[in-house]
Image (cartoon, rainbow, N blue to C red; front, side, top):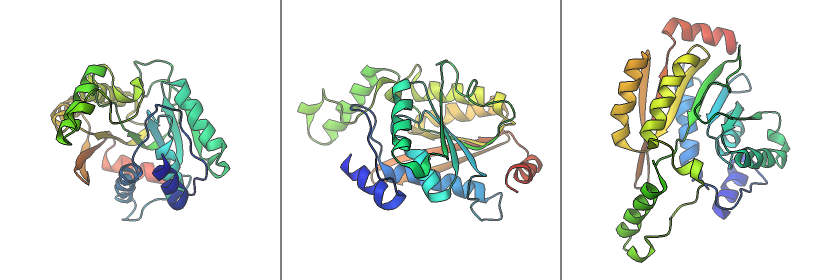
Amino acid sequence: MALNKALLKYYYKVDNWEIPEGYLCPPIPGRADYLHHMADLLADLNNGTIPRGEKIKVLDIGMGANCIYPLIGNSVYGWEFVGTDIDPIAIRSAKDIVDNNPAFAKHIMFRLQTNKANIFKGIIKSGEGFDLTICNPPFHASMQEAQLSTATKWKKLGMEKQSAALNFGGKKTELWTHGGEAGFLRRMVEQSVLAGQQCLWFSTLVSKKDTLPIIYKSLHIAKALDVKTITMTHGQKTSRIVAWTFLTPEEQVQWKKDFWV
């Protein structure tokens, strides 16, 4: 918490950042790296120049109580954000963070997803367009799976006696979901089809390498027109970003004319 507060204040001009006890406290560098890669992806459509300012709209799926992506993305690139979550406490926490940092107030909005089965439906409004959707999905399929993963980590550190205690924070909705990471991302891909003309690029973090073939198969069935995989490494941790679009190159150029000019 102390390190995050310092990083957010020094690099991103976030003066007041608090999250409820027990909620996910994310590592700032990895979150920033995701956004920088997405900025490079948008630059591909803009002659290599990263588009900045409020004309760029980003949808953060499962924002959490920490509001990290909107804070960093608006601070660095001036992008506008809509943060979503199924947890009212998380939404309230994110609103409190923005309320306590007035410079962000006009640039970050929040929407509660009231139907846990939906990801985009009920969130993206008619006539609305997003240049990016981002997501850090739940990793595990159950609490038991999360505990097993934790025990393995403690063992690698030579601290087997700690195996019953989680070595990370996070509430149920942040850590596990039906079907785990693979199940959630399969549903995300399937549902992204319905919003395919309202989003330039969909994207998600993928923690488990074994999830990739499942995503690729789902994207093939969904008939995504372009799929990109970006590898990120931070210390001993390796993760991936998978991004996809349903827009043709010609439609992407038209998107730029409609939304960026």
